[in-house]
Image (cartoon, rainbow, N blue to C red; front, side, top):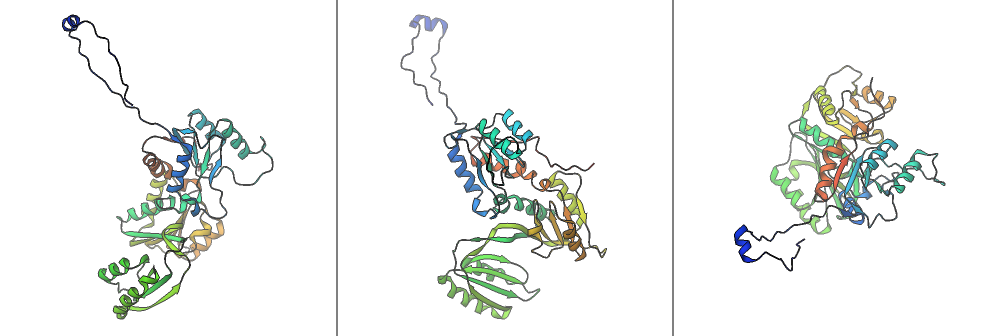
Length: 380
């Protein structure tokens, strides 16, 4: 903002010359260092679409002081779990917005009192006028989300040679009316030119060594049929089905990672420890005693047992699993790595989310990561 000076009283000209007084007009600029609460919520919803959350989950703005929309937000506090010590840490830091990955409120209640930990957290947050926001499973499933962070790190262990897809893809609203599956001969990939033509004339879904899936509009259908018929000798067969929704290419629960080259389990263990910044993991090995290279990894941060076994894989990676789930996977010849629930999530906050939020708000909001937030379990 420029400060306009209407009059400047100077000494007489003789004195100016005598003392060599120089008149310089200075300007100052003021940088906005906060964002209205309403805009913060809007931008968070664009970065992490809440419609990606699981139906059972409790996501979004969970604790809302009355002035949230008009509040000037100049700092966001990130934590994996909002415990009472972590809430006090946020208050001491004088933040005015808390982003808690796990929802501190989950179950319905009829009274609000000091007997419940979650209600004490809600009461204290409101008393200190701090909104609390939780994305949870929406952050797991979105583009550049938590599971993608893990899958990208695993692919990097193989020099970037690999790909990933959601285990349970999010069903996007209808954009295409037809789904086409093309079944390939093993060890006989299609040429790059054919793949390029398929991608140009469809919504390309995924491509493996034995199958291509894509979707298209009614207008694209005839072009694709003619194109497929032109290379029909190079494939086993193909089919078309009508569809009401289309599976997302990037968004969805869990990730199935396919590495172009198999890598040793010890390399993955070392990489997982470094990614999650932990000293120990628990590993289950095939009961047969067979040692094999890892090419496929089914993963889900947190408690992923209901997700990861939807795909057959050489390795299952998650935060926690039941004893019998681990035993069953090892009996079927797979490796299992478990890291404890929040250890598989917490590193994302500082490595990915913090810089993403700083960029989202153009540096107008200070982003702080909790120093007290930690997994409740320790190996001793």
